[in-house]
Image 1 (cartoon, rainbow, N blue to C red):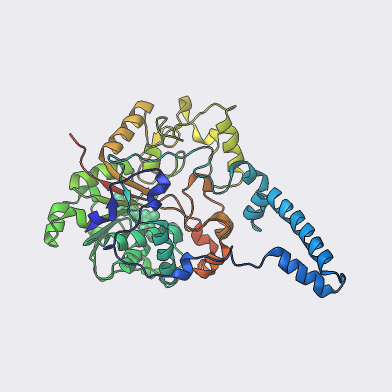
Image 2: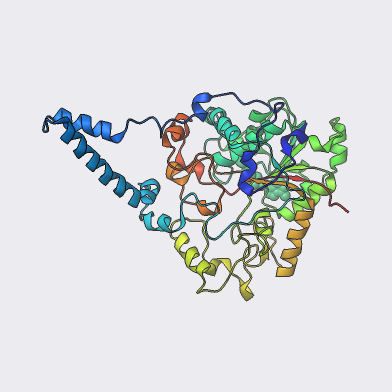
Length: 446
Ligand SMILES: C[S@@+](CC[C@H](N)C(=O)[O-])C[C@H]1O[C@@H](n2cnc3c(N)ncnc32)[C@H](O)[C@@H]1O
C-alpha cells in the first residue's frame, strides 16, 4: 500500500533520512560496498608514506631523524590543508573564477545557507519513510538504467537528478496507476516505465510524443493512454472518477500523479485534491524569484517559517549575500531581480506565475500568506529530493547549493561518485535540478 511509505514522525526537514525503512517496503539490492565508502578511510597514513619515501631516497640514514622530519612535514601539510580546506574541496577546474573565498564565507554544504530556504509545514509532521541509505542504493541501481535512456538529449526536459527522483518515488510507492501531466518527448514516461514495468500510465500532454519521432529520439509507451493531440484535455478538466473507474481503480490513494506541465502548482494542488488524489510529484519546484509558475517552494516562503521571507533593502545582509552568490551560480537571484514593484519579493517579483509565464497575476502579500496557510491545511508530507551529488563532483554551476537540501553524495566523495558510475555521465545532465518535490495531501481537517 502507498500508505506504508510514511511514518507519523516528523522532525527537521533533513531528518527524513533518520527514519528507517519498513520491512515490507520494496527492496533495493543490498550493496555493503556502497554503504561502507572507504575512500576516505583506507588511505595509508601520511607519515608512513613520507617515511618510506625519504628512506627510499637514501638521503637520511637514521630512522629516528627520518621519522621526525616526516612528522614535521606532515604537521606542516596538515596545517596548510586546514587553512585551505574549503577551497580545496570546492574549487572546480571549470570555474572561471575561484570560488574559494565565497565558499569560505557561506559553506558549500550549507543546510540552506545563511539565506535560509523555507520548508512547507505539514499537518501532523509526517515525513517520508525512505532513508539516505535507500537513496544511495537506489542511485547504484538507477545509473545503469539511466544510461540506456532512449532520449539522450533532453534539453527542456528532466535531467539526471529528477529522473532518479521520479524513478525512486514511483518504485517505492508501487502505485496501481501513474498519471503524468506534461510529457514532451516522453522521457518522464520512460522513467515511470523503468520504475514500474507493468503499471498502466496515463499521459496528459498537448502534443503527442510520437510527433517528436519525426525529428529524433522520443519515447512512446505501449501501456500508456495518451490524452494528447486532439484527445488532449487539461488535467483540471478530466473526469478522473470516470477515467479511473473505466480502468477498475477505485482507490485514488494508489495513484501517483506527476506534474511537469509548468502550471501554477497551487492550481494543480486544488485540482488534485478535488479529484481525490493523495500522492503528487512536482518536477519544477522553483525557488522564490525564479521560474515560470508559482511553486510550492515559493508558496511556503513566509516570514513565519525559519529561513522564509525576504528583504528588499539594498543595504541589508541578505542583499550582500545575494549579490555574492549570483557571481557563482547562474540561477541565484540578487535583490534587484528578487524584488518587483512596491518591494514585492514573493512568487516572482510579486507575481503568481502560471502556464509557462503566459498567465501571470500580481498578488498581494496577504494573498500569498493565505495561499501558504491553505497549503499547510492539506499537506501531510512535503519532501524535496536532494541533488544526487555535490557541485564539486558534478561541476554543475546553475543552482545554488545553499538553496538545496544536502546532496545524497556530499562533496569530497569522489571515489563513491566514480563507483556509482556518475562520472560517466555528461555533466550537463546535472544542471536541471529544481528541487523536485513529493507531496502527500488530504482534505483539510474541519
Ligand atoms: C518541460 S516539458 C515536460 C518534460 C518531460 N516531463 C520530460 O521530462 O522530458 C513540459 C510539457 O508540458 C506540456 N504542457 C503544456 N501545457 C500543458 C498542460 N496544460 N497540461 C499538460 N501538459 C502541458 C508541454 O507541451 C511540454 O510537453
